[in-house]
Image (cartoon, rainbow, N blue to C red; front, side, top):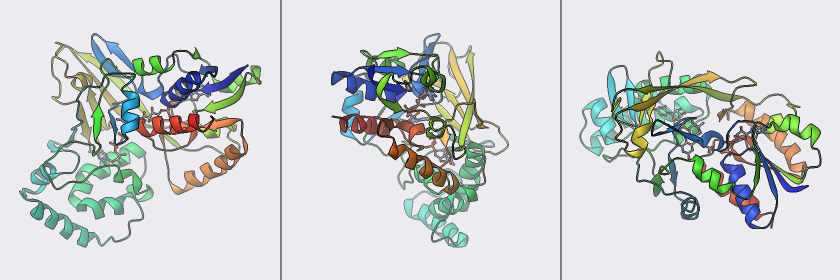
Length: 364
Ligand code: FAD
Ligand code: UDP
């Protein structure tokens, strides 16, 4: 009998396991995938670190989390500065003076604010009730139409009027010439990739891959005193109240015999008619200089059981359903739910680490 059965060898499960082992506890970590690290898994293809499940840039304002993660890897000084491509027009992201200059020819913050203010007034939104209204209020109609609407509707498979406003609040808006996608104090990509971080975190815990909790639990009912569930909360409860909705992705990766394909790590395709949302050129995350390159196209797809649930769809309907599962979860004192799927929340890596540390600490 173990102290903890940890379902999911992703970031949450690995941090929890590491801390529990350090406290003298025994952990069995299972994952249904054939590898550790969950969605932050990276692998090497001909000398290039490839982010198998989409671009991952570590960024945080939390010094404790930054110091913690730096114990397990050395981070480079990569700063994410993606390009948005709308038809043949290229714009800097996030929305900043470079974007406004290209969009309207304005040169000063006051000129940019005046254009946005005019478009805001025309849209007539004061209390945004959905993503479209939030975007119009934030940046006006031109940017919404060219850089947000198409991308967002592809990404989420829904009209912007049906989506919650908070999704777009993730993006900074600045009236300075600064293309850093994030506002956080600390940022970088681990040298050698993320998998090594998780490998190091899991030292001392026992790991079984290709092991699905649903089958495993039938044969191993009393294997641990407590369960840490980082898989989907609705799956854990046998979909008793119905299925929470997720958004899935399909990644198409190619190695190319050229040195520099797109000149930047991330290009967002914001037009509705292009079926993919992003093209990632992995070598630029590590300032690579090899003669070859690896690129990945990211296609949003409708999620159904059996596909990877990448993004929780936190609209009113799903949040209400989640709360019903949360009530069941609160009654299960033998189970800790954590991570993006266990909490049905759009968490970045730094939040996942902070929450895992908190969850483990509250055990002692
Ligand atoms: P996961 O990594 O999903 O781990 C959960 C694990 O549980 C998985 O390995 C899964 O196989 C396993 N599992 C599920 N169900 C079962 C079961 N029934 N039995 C056994 N195992 C099971 N964050 C950032 O900070 N910066 C970024 O740039 C960034 N980019 C992202 C890009 C994309 C495309 C996506 C999807 C996410 C991105 N994130 C980013 C978020 C980041 O991936 C997550 O915060 C983090 O990976 C979540 O860790 P987790 O352990 O909660 O979940
Ligand atoms: N977004 C957009 N245009 C872009 C990039 C992002 O409209 O070029 C919107 C989109 O709705 C997306 C949200 O902003 O879901 C958050 O973007 P982020 O890059 O943080 O998404 P993630 O990396 O988590 O997929």
